[in-house]
Length: 190
Image (cartoon, rainbow, N blue to C red; front, top):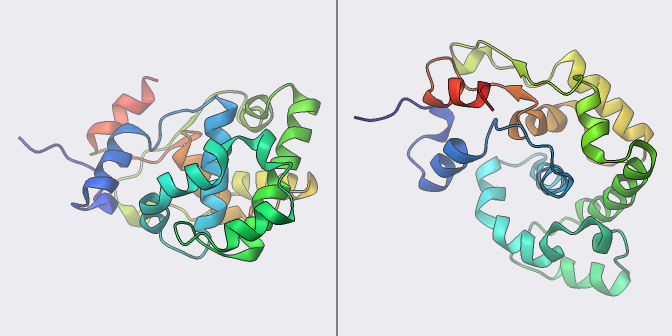
């Protein structure tokens, strides 16, 4: 019997695996939170599948998403990233990755962890939505507006409200699986 999934993942095996194992699962680990934030900023203006297809390349190019190393990237490393055909070679987004790693470290110093900071907007608990159709899903919310504004205040780049809402969905800050999806209840029990 076929499982009912959110229709956005279609029949693409990569999308299905991402949907079934990661999307909407609450993430509290700073390394994973940084990975998703980096990937979401590169996704801005593109489709998520484009980023998913290049995820392993990003992991290799950006030192396993080690934000401590990324924060120290120099001009030589930046130049090598610009030439890396395996990633999205957007100069502003690459610069933003470095800037965001530095801002990420500052948030950790101030709040103890990035997880404490980001989940503090929700008092540590995911928002459980009850959407029936893809048309019901918002592109952004007043909360993503607030988080986006605060991240920008802390020096982050490419963190507009729509990027942040997508990040909230990916990291399980909101459960936006449709109520008909088999993952809806599973993500609620995490």
